[in-house]
Image (tube, rainbow, N blue to C red; front, side, top):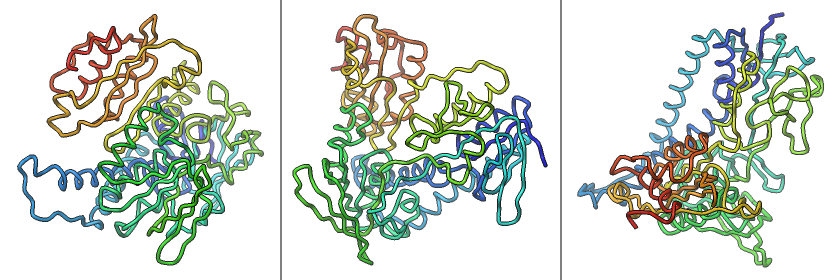
Length: 467
């Protein structure tokens, strides 16, 4: 039986990063993955393929709606959807190769197969070829999550699909119904909407992206409705999803019990994700889960069993690839006897629609609920020179600061390249910067980042210069 210093179960962003950091710190490391390829949901059926399709759809949308204003005339623009999908697969393949290289470089022992605990130090790995058993003093669980699907949705992977199937459709549908107005549903809905699909979004909530500052959802809904023609049916509860063979019918009830029926080519179910711990035999290792199926951990991310840790989507917190990565590094450094730091309140959240949406810290709704006195500075992209140049003038940056100390408590933005811009806010808040600190930092002109400076000025005695 092979023995290791640490075994990592799951090769998604949390798992493979944890394995790399463990190896860097001198630990003999094994990485177990049940699928033939490394990367988990993020690389294979999540972050990377969805962003590849988003990028392609954004280029198509801009070419059909904005090129003429630039003086670029093209007679006829069409989508070769098979090529779009080939490009996506090429990106995934290249990143698979990159991961394989990193495993070899760091001398990580990769084992393919389904892992299950025999006891707290022993793991069995079952594959189609053989069964093997390995041991380690420390084990990290990083098995991720899978889409939540309710039984009455009649999920069949053909017409009634999740994000996994939506990333590999053979055609651009004429019509699509999206159940769930969260991040994944809106990202994939916008991909197909830009390519010509008539998209309808149904959600039981009265807001879209309802876990973020409500001002962001209001602005995004306006943009998606006005520019892409996305139809929203909020405050509606789905009652029936039926595959009719060549199409699907979704029936929903409004808060007033008014029934709607929508026919479409596909129904995309996007109501969230749940921790994936099936077949791990956690009970044999003495690892407990909570009522939601998440693995219980302490502030060191150690489970109820000493020596076994859990990270990423299987534990409490936002289900984000970068959160999993940070937790992977955190645990590896704990195992090495270091004292790492991770602030879960400053992990940014991003929606990769266009305009992009990003936030970090506390929302206005949270601050009101906690009765914290605050002040707000808001600046729109339409008043920014770089945004005008690129014809991306929708959205704004909102900076919320403590009304007395001026410390930044939250930054919420919707607009061009906000997925990148949010990092400035994260750095500032890690160092407990004030709104005035950002307001006094020189930002290059013309850039999108100037909107952050102007919002900070607006939060500092309403001093915005360009509005």
